[in-house]
Image (cartoon, rainbow, N blue to C red; front, side, top):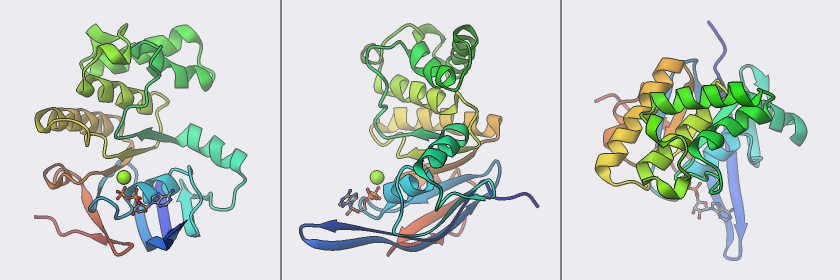
Length: 229
Ligand code: ADP
Ligand code: MG
């Protein structure tokens, strides 16, 4: 059997605030296998973003292990964690975080060029990805000239540009109206399936969560797998 793409063990995270220490994750465990699409649900404040930031090597937890493709990244120096992240992980956030001065095409091509792909080839791949997401007519628009759903599609294309093995999406449709949210979610889901990327998608939309292979709920800082309905 192959290694999980992402393995989380005993993840603990607390925040020290003026009001005292807030413990959010209390020993969360999760394995995500190649090609698997996993939903992460839980009310606002339950720790979904904290978990994704730790899993994506953006933040260091207080305790626990994060293993990516069989490599324990927990104690690696920041430089190596950044390298693993750039080579392996794509992120989609609730807000698109696209560069406002750049076209859709350049926003998607940029991570490829940073990874060393020549400009022409990067733009070709970016154009193909945007086309797959139905944005062929929008490649030269800047983010402000696009709708919220289009902006999120560009963000999805950008996250997948480098062919990551792991996609982490933090309420990727949480800022969209219900109809657009469903459409963009389907784009994300279809593209993830087609590319075979393993994905963890945080959402508090239970209807969307039902489409995933497995769903985990954050409860009191632990992950509990939900029965399929
Ligand atoms: P979710 O994504 O499920 O809404 P978060 O992981 O963002 O949950 O946050 C979990 C809890 O931790 C919330 O109560 C939030 O206010 C708190 N929190 C998150 N980040 C910080 C931080 N940097 N400093 C202090 N508290 C934080
Ligand atoms: Mg969040």
